[in-house]
Length: 191
Ligand SMILES: [Mg+2]
Image (tube, rainbow, N blue to C red; front, side, top):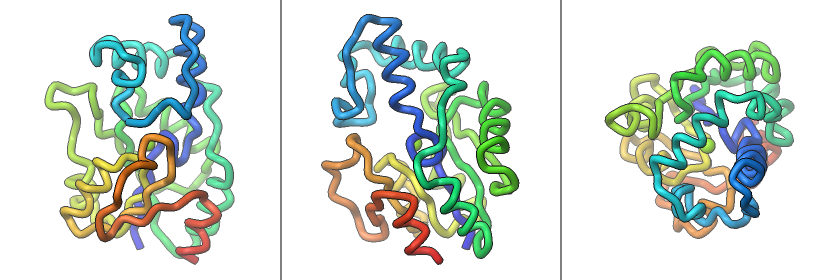
């Protein structure tokens, strides 16, 4: 199979680092469990544009460079690489594509054939449709943590594993979307 893997909160344990940065810089006390939605501005109770600008500051800063892989991802992906073709499709801004490539090559050497940023929130049109991109790249399965991207892929008959996270826990999943709780579980399903 050709499998597309999302980066933040699927490959990379980014959210705790972002929350820590946000709390320190803006004198807040948020925790990951507060994120009932992936619309961060609703959690922060702030303007979307302001939150997106703060996120861009964060990802361009050195604070972002301490992000580590999600537990189990490295081992599972080495296993999956034996039988599947793996690419990264992330909503990250294109401004940090090179940084993302370096990070992926450091923690996941030789695993991914391609890394693609869809620029969610950062380009004028609000970013590219992940389902469209996965279709054009002939992806069979997407692994992601955003229910919206799962729905975009389902429209193109691409199955999805939804990584369990606080912001998708309340969602009722459509056919073709399977909730997974760990990389170990993903590896078990695909090997
Ligand atoms: Mg993500």
